Image 1 (cartoon, helix red, strand yellow):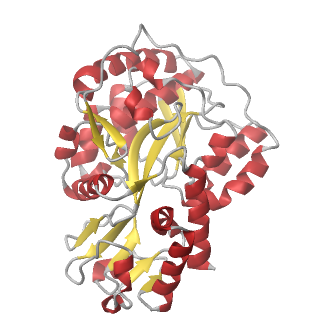
Image 2 (cartoon, one colour; image 1 turned 90 degrees about the vertical axis):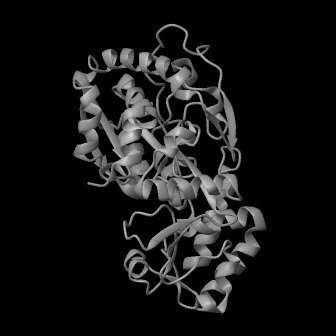
Image 3 (cartoon, helix red, strand yellow; image 1 turned 90 degrees about the horizontal axis):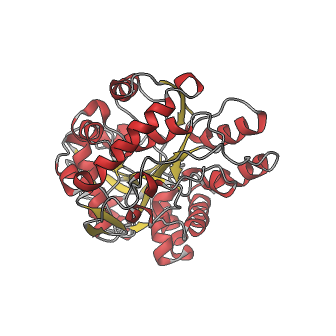
Length: 388
């Protein structure tokens, strides 16, 4: 069973509506903060390597993880005594039984309840708060997709560095947002039928007539181009790609990509095991860090913290994600983790990780908390040009 989790951020268009809804009932202050055991903040210094906009700590598992693991053991003791050990997790997709079983193999006394809400994730969380319903304990998303929750204060104030996480991991997002993975815009290509160019402009070549697809909801694949070249240039590019007949808007990109009928698909990470398919970054493609955290409305804060740390960094769990196709996701672990983790990848995870890391190091543009609103505006402009 594949584990699909996509939280990249094309739902920015709905942010205004969510803000109107949430204005009826803003979150109250979170319950008492969970305190770390001892002084984990000064446990280690990061052996830092820059990977594009991300700082990698090569010594993470040697010097940081033992302290984080100790903190997680303490969180588990609190979590299993809170709300009868109930842990509610809503995400883009429902957690699979295999994932829950892996978590429970280490933390057996927690009972996970999960829902998959796709584009309705943020609105469901905000609605639950407004109506007093049992809410998710964990919240997650990219800076764009979680914009409404962020602006209305739905991320509980957790200082993750106090629980041993390197301070260097918090240079892209807000301090309360634990970085757990990355996703980004990539060209998927059927290498039996075509060769992908290194730029979006390259797709204007007449040889690509009818050869390129994009889904109507994936306008964000053009946003990095707009962030670099400007909105007018991005809108013109989308118009030329459509008017030339090179670009088709398809809701099902996967089948024509796999058959080779439309051999280039603009999207994110690859999820089709067809050996003819590959994926590559392009100049000005966007990279989006993904984050987890604690909902201010959480009934089991300790459980939410425990889940977030486990899912983001546990070496045994990540080794499974990197090597076992049952746990392959649409996201790649956070690039701040050591090179050795990514070197272990096989199959689709290797394909996707290699492409996203290459993009980070060679021309991709990374969304940050300071540029979030510019990204939202650019995604909206791209959507209007693509679907208007």
